[in-house]
Amino acid sequence: MATTFEKLSSNKVKLSFVVPAEKFDEGLQTAYRKMVKKISIPGFRKGKAPMKVIENYYGASVFYEDALDAIFPEIYQEALKEHDVQVVDRPELDVQQIGKGQELKFTVEVFVRPDVTLGEYKNLGLEKEVAEVTDDDVSADIERARDRASRFVEVTDRPAKLDDQVNIDYAGFLGDEQFDGGTAQGHDLVLGSGSFIPGFEDQLVGAEVGAEVEVNVTFPEQYHAENLAGKPVVFKVKVNSIQEKQTPALDDEFVKDVSETANTVEEYRAEIREKLEKQANEKAEAAFENAVIEKVSENAEIDIPAAMIEDQIDSMLRDMEMRMMYQGMKLDDYFKYTGQTREQVREMYKPTAEERVRTQLVIEAVMKAEGIQATDEEIDAEISKYADQNKKSLDEFKAMLTDGDKTYFAEIASLQKTVEFLKANAK
Image (cartoon, rainbow, N blue to C red; front, top):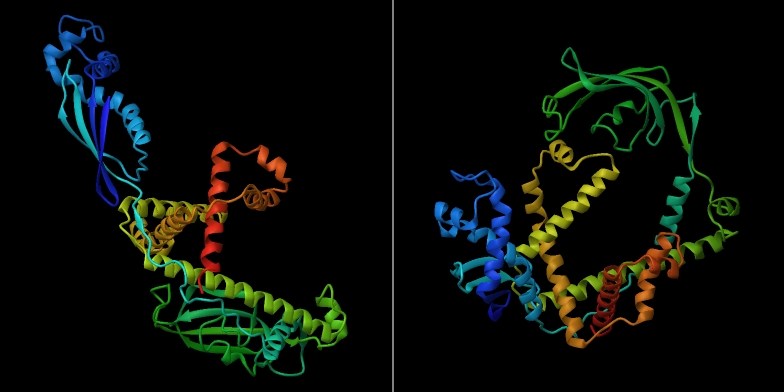
């Protein structure tokens, strides 16, 4: 078999095949054995008609398509390997010559992983900018910790005020009719939390235990229940109890309750500052990495085949489906509940999918241009992350890996090493 390779563009190639007549005749025999059991010819039992008789009866080309299908996968894969072609889509065949006892001649055009023309990927003028952690930031974080440690204590000697938690029974009415979903017994509501329809909580401020209050509100125009959207309604509310929020004092006893290492308020402030500075650095590092990758990608030229983007969208939908499954929901049910279609979600994912493919191709191009390759130690470090997640030692986890798995981890480690190279050379 002879094949020739022609590059049509940065992302498409053409392979021309000349297949010996003997090879095509093998395909004809395979096609005959596959089809003969389904063919009825007058004068022969079903499945027993000779090949020549069937060709005379239906025409010489009766087996051609199946014969080509039988031999194509093998010769196609051989050609891809010979010319080092990485395809990303289904091939388009064009047959020039086909016939029994003849050489088979055809061409294949197929989209491949595209060439990447790298622009500037060093000296980008970018650097990491870490936000300063102020005393106010530390105090705000401590106040959030105090708020989380708060508890509600029942009060009976005053009416409800903002930040109180009230326990209520309520029933909602549209006109004289009680509407579905607007009734509850023993519901806890923090006044001022914004949990209910705007205006509802404000009208309970000043109510005492045992009070029965008519709350008048109007549902938002975009409310999910169409029969209530934009409609004025009345809630008949009974206040069962009032609880006051009590926040612990910021003292050494509080610190010992919420911290595993600090014993005093000053030690706790230092601990919180260290935590916030670490978070600020991690946030800055992530932002810096994204900015570098985005700039390098922006400077490159690539013509991405549509099939690669569609494959990425498929992957994103599979991830989405898995997340839905963990929540006990089917993806089609999610579409139904949200009023979205699969096609709409695919279109929504398209820009992100294209950016992911582009980023992957650009980083791989830099890796190739710089000859970057992860060391065994760096690959082991990547594998260790997954070994830890599976509660296994590195050696135990590596023993479970296939050759394909090992190649995957080597690629991931090399890609990450390339990203670190880009960051180190971004200034």
